[in-house]
Image (tube, rainbow, N blue to C red; front, side):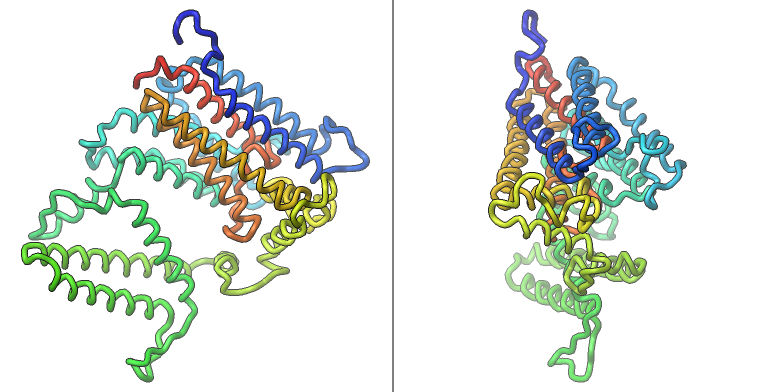
Length: 465
């Protein structure tokens, strides 16, 4: 920081204000949801809202400590921080299971979830690595190292198992794509191992996002068709299961493309076009096969959850109870809601919506404040995300920029998936709403993440790497 410049001269008060508003709205919603007439005092630490107040002040205290540390420390010590969080993820695997998962590190009701803090360690190290990479000269080693940094914590988190946090870690891939880290070197190496093939470049890695959408689309089609039996008019007497109908459709489409390219492509490009179609066909069939046979190999309750999410079956009072009750609570709020502390469907006392103060905190808020209130809440989150993107774009340091984008993507994943869970647009995978849901680990981790960003931004004029 320049001489004579105060510690908060470049502090982003706008982002901090939105953060504080969300914290206050969150704790007030927890108070309303878990309200106990026998314990009305907000600071009654025997109640969930009292404990949430503890976590709020602890988070602010940790945030202050984080902000007082010089920003260079986060660049220089990102590797020890990363390995420290990995160590916690290993230790937690030897802890007694809680609700079927080994995700908590602590004793009794006092504990933390290392997976929440591992996002910070991974984000810092990946930001440091990407900021040192020349994307115009990236190699296979570059791509592998970047993915290994993400893969280690993902594997450990999957072993707990914690599907929600595992999914959140895929947000780092989008930041890598934004910074120009693609899979082109790796794909080129694999393709050029084919005898007689010599590609100098490939567009696959640089088109990661549209390819990802194609992968998601093909996976959904395979799952939707998994239990179908289809007959074709041009194949009388033959009935194919859903998977084989998808495979047949892909084969016909690939043959059609090969036929078209034979006529529209230049003669010198025909063999290359045919090879690209062949590789694409092989990858599509492989993906469809993995999705289909992987789905068939799942446990029955896992298959039920996927089929319920895709609308292939209904079980409103069984496996789909949480999502069904959550949507009912959101819908019961109407346009302007029932009023503060008047939630009936989503209150802890009624217990119609399990975990209404944690993963389904959006339900009681929507029931109390209706569409109008939820619209304001969504606008607050969107404003926060846009503000973080603006902060990212004004950084001189590549490290600061990459870290800011990672914070934005992690928050976006949590915000989008959590609200999607509550309104039936996403599967129930246990992801908290940032700064809102009850729980100490998530609030502390998000707060530390946010204050590191505020610190990096406040010293952006001195950061050049």
